[in-house]
Amino acid sequence: MGHLWLVLLLLLGAASLWIATALCRKPQDYAQLRDQLNTLFYRQRLREIDEDEEQGVVTEKTELITALQHSLLSDIPDHAPKAVKLGGRWVLLPVILVLIAVSVAMYLKTGGILQQMELSQVQQDYPQLRARLMDPNAEHLTMGELQQFALGLRATLQDEPNNVEDWAMLGRLGMVLNNSQLASQSFQRALHLAPNDANLKTDYAEVLVRSPDPQDNRQAQLLLQDMRVKYPQDTRLLTLLAADLYAQQKYSEAIRYWQQLLPSLAIGSPQREAIEKGIEQAKTNAGLQTSQLMLTIDLSTSAKRMLPENGVLYISVTDGVSPLPVAVKRVPLSHFPLNLVLDDSNAMVPERLLSAQHQLQVRARISRDGSAKPQKDDWFGLSSVTQFSGNQSLSVIIDQQEP
Image (cartoon, rainbow, N blue to C red; front, top):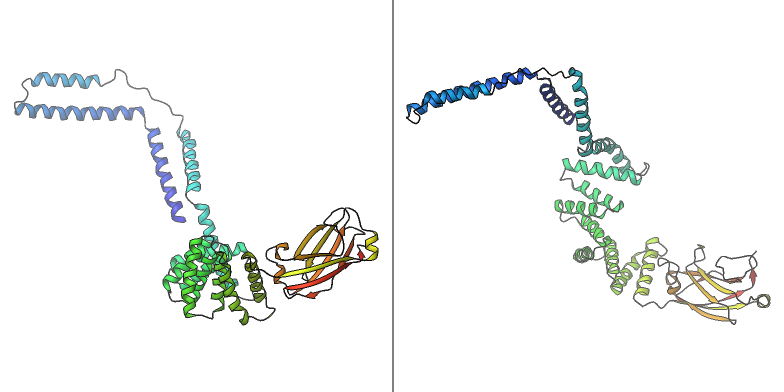
């Protein structure tokens, strides 16, 4: 940084000196310079005439010299030039200041000084950020700090381009920061240095699986299939294979790999539940879903006497723990008892399917004006929390009123 400023100041000084010299030159100096040039030209021309006479090229030497003298005299002005007053040397100060301002502005715009300052600050903070990241008991880095750390790590790798561990770390940072290009390029560099590292291959495959580019997905499939020959029971490989097949809408193959994983996962573990939901969603997408909840809705005697003419029946199914519905159905009032069927097509969100639940609770409410929000004195019924096996029947009696 200091060298850049030194060069800039030297250039500005040289330019300012040149301007000052040109503006401060007196008219007499220009006249003297002209006379010197004319004299040199006259003498050179005389030598050429003498050489031409010796060679017999010219025969009228006297006339040529006379004409040359007339030409020299014609270049001398009749009156000496008047001195031009420039108003003193201080008149140059604005010119020099403008030159400096323009030069500095152009450098700030194109010279990258702000980026250099930011990089310098990142390099100063990098050791402390790395220490925090490597310490499991330290405060976690924010997303902004992770971006700073990634920038500092890239700068460090310019000096240590063969550091496999740091290239792998930069690739994982790219995944965390959702920067697929950074992650992919970093893992490629790491694999170039350690081509047989199975963990690096798996990390790189995960980047390719996450990519929205179908070509990357196909490359991931080839890489994972090759690795599965060597590591047939690797849980992470099977998970990535299933996810990649699911992304390519090959649902039956994805289900097959997920089902291979289930025996090795503890019942009730978050990973097992996620895989079970993935299987059910894949079945739904492939048209293989057979899970159903058969409901019978009836009214108490009191509810029948107060049944509104234009009411709407809302049915919501939860997992008995979270109030967020797993499935919802809206039907106009008709005769009771009412029989209906709910399945994954009634799911509120694709991530929480009815078929993936292990227990259910059903709530049926009659809205007098069709409002989805419960209102005072609306009649409703609530079932107990019941284990769900995938094909089940439940009965709900509407016998209570909203307080």
